Length: 572
Ligand code: ASP
Figure 1 (tube, protein in one colour):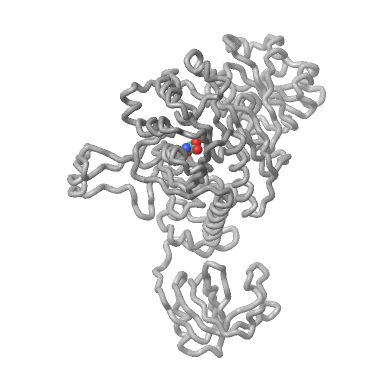
Figure 2 (spheres, protein in one colour; figure 1 turned 180 degrees about the horizontal axis):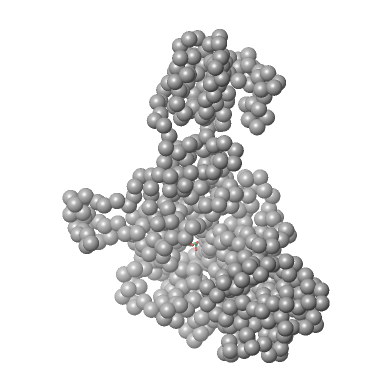
C-alpha cells in the first residue's frame, strides 16, 4: 500500500491474463511474486492493442500508476493484493511460444509429469515453489559459509580432475587427450585432499564441494551432489561433532527452526538393536525388543525352524496396533517377506480376545511382559540379526506411516557413533570398509585389527535427522603403518597401495597432525528444510533416476573425431 500514488516501471512474465471486455488484467510475475496490472478503458489505445494479444510467459515491461484496489477486489492471498498498476505504457521484450507445460497453476491442479518438468526445466523453475526452494538453497549456502568462516575454517578448493577417491561407489572417469590410455577420476569426495591440507598445516578447512558417484540411482541420490565438507586438525570426535552441530543448528535456524544442542547420541550397536537401522527415526518411540526368552518358551511352530545359531526372536509392541486392518498386516508381512527370512508373525490384543497368525499361543501375561496392552499388536520375526534388523526397520517405518502416531519430537537429530570399521562383503564375506579406508580404528580395538577385524569399531560418526542420514565423518588414520594394515585387510597388495594411495602415505609420513572431519549432504539438508519430496526439487538442473539430464540431453554420443583424439573406441 505504501506505493499507492507512485509511478512505477516493472518488468516480468505474463503469468495470467484475464479479458473482462472493458478491462483487461495481467498478473505480472517476477522473482518477488505477482502484481496485478489493470488496463482499463482509459488506457492508451496502443497499450490496449498489445495487451489483447499477449500470450502467457511473454516478457513485458510496463509503466503505470499504483492505485489501491476497491475493497471488493482485494486479494488477501497476494503480498501485493491491495494494489494494482494502471498501465500507461507496455512493451514486449521477449516473445514466448505457447509453453509446453504451464507455469501458472490453478488451486489443486496437478503438476505435469516429472519427465516434462525436467525436460522444460526453464519453465518448471519459473514456478513459485521452485523459486522458493532455490532461494532457500542460496540462503542456506550463505549461512553455512558464514558459520564455518566464523569458526575460522578456511574455504579451499580441491581438484575436480583427480585420482580415484574410494567412497564406495564407481568413479566417473575422464580420458586424458595428452596422455593416451590414462584417465582422471572425478572426485567421489575431497577426502584425500582435505587430509593433505591438514598435513600441510591449514588446521581447519571447508568447501562446498561437488562430488560425483556412479551408483545405481535411488530416489534420494544424484550422480553429482553437493557436500559441506570440512576437516580440522588436533581434534577428536567431540570437537568435530561440536562443529557440525553448530553448522546444522545454524542451517535450521536460517529456515526458522530452533534446534537444541547437543544432539542425542547412540552407538551403532544400540541403534541396530533398538531400531534395526543405523539411521533411526527418533521422532517416534516404537523400540524393537529381544523377545527370545519369553516367546521361545511358548514353543510356537512358526519360530522353531529358524531358532538356531544365534538366531533371536525380536519384535515390536505397537501401541494401538489392534487398529491395523487385516490388509495392513498382510502388506507388512509382504514387505517383510521381500527382505528374506522367516517373515512376520503377529498378534492382536483386543479386550479378552487374542488373535493373529500366532495368537493362540499367547496369553495376556506373556503379552503384558512384552509391553503389549489391550488395543495393541505384537509384530515379530526370527533369525540372525543381519536378517531381523532390516525386516523390523522396514516394518517399524511402515507401521509409523500407517498408524501415523503423533511424533513426540520435532527435528529429531541424533548422532550414531562407534560404527564397525569393516563390514563383510555380502557375496564374498571379505572385509570391506564401512565408511572409507582412512577412518581410524577405535583406540580400544586397534589390537584386534589383525585377529578379529569385524569386531573392530571405528572413530566414525553419522548425523541422522528424522530417519535420514545427513552426513558422515570420522577421525582419520595418521600412522602410515596402521593405514597400510587397513589397506592389507581390504585385500590390496603393497604395489596397488603405492599406485593408488602413495601420495597420501607420503603425506602421512611427513608429520601428520591428528585430524578428522565430516561431510554434510547439502542437498538432503535443503530437501528437509524445503519440505520437498524429491531431491530433484531442490537442485536447479538435476539428473533423473536413470542418471540422465533431460533438459540438456546428457549423456550423449561423442563425435568420432573427439573420441579419436581421446584414443577411445566405443564397443557396441
Ligand atoms: N569423505 C566422507 C564422505 O564423503 C566424509 C568424511 O569422512 O569427512 O562421506
